[in-house]
Length: 209
Image: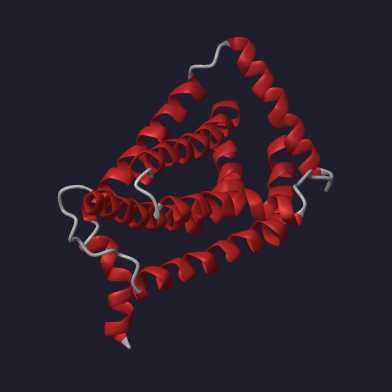
């Protein structure tokens, strides 16, 4: 049993270490850009941001937090790993996956930095509840899918080029990892739909008091 589990999860870190390094580097680059832009906004942008966050927290405190419906929440959560999964079946993933990694890192870091800029350490607490708790699953899922799909896209590009005899990476473990990531996405959707609103509502009251 232990060997089977190692076979499923070992591939991205043994066969695909360069892919993991590349995608994680682009993710980190997007995160740095998000932090930079969040803290470099002018005063007008700061006022708009502060007003938006205050309205958001006030709605959360009143129990009227405007969340997307379940189909919208599924789309928002599953679109990132879904796009990575599809890009793993084309050589275009060599460009698309780094681009998605930059965007994912940017949006996550920009959101967290915005809370921190307006509310300081207390804003970081709310950002952790709103983004960090589901991020404990969604970010590793994203990086795993990005590394695996990037490695697969690289194999396709090599297969169509000089190294035409290179075998394709779509084996049993490949799809088992995808299934595990899909299960983690389902857990993220449950957390955002049932758990996070309650936690954010309580934290918003403390932050606005």
